[in-house]
Length: 284
Image (cartoon, rainbow, N blue to C red):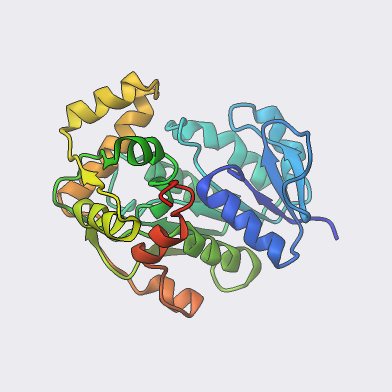
């Protein structure tokens, strides 16, 4: 069977999990990669060259594709890069785009996710917008070094609460949207079942790992300087700082029932995430 699903961001947090869950269900798909080669990661995932910065890769990547799982690369915040892709998707008759957006994107005019949503709407391709809260797995990727080596969470979120969500749950919804009918032209606000401060997250880590983890709560300026010293592009730093600012002022604490309704079970909790990823953090 020729794959009719294209998964972008297969090396990232959510994209890799979507690919994994499709693979477990033995559903063929194309894995969009910048460079094809090496051993295939997924038995049912055929590699295809795709680079958002190189429109010449779009035609072949979208050939025969009906449904696309679309992720914005962290380093790209200019929505104009998506316009050639959407034009090619129109020309090739793509029937459904599942876009990984951001909780509250419809009101956060400054985030690139909303600007991309608008371009998808303008393209008039049936869509599903997944609007998740902050990923738990950002802690073991973006913030892994500071937690594992410095024993601290270094984010400028103040005492604001965040309704953290596990990417395994986001992927479960994405797979449903990509393989079932009835999700077209809908937006889902996806959160965990509780909202926690970063201090509470640090306390949970300390309890479960029996190792003291602090919540540093730097100023926005110090946070930006920290990541600049680590070589992160300024645009990406600004997006991160903006997301943490929304948490600080209380915009990230919303808890919704969408996830439970869609997957038929309770969301994965922060406690379970910390337990499941203990080995990755090397807190044995």
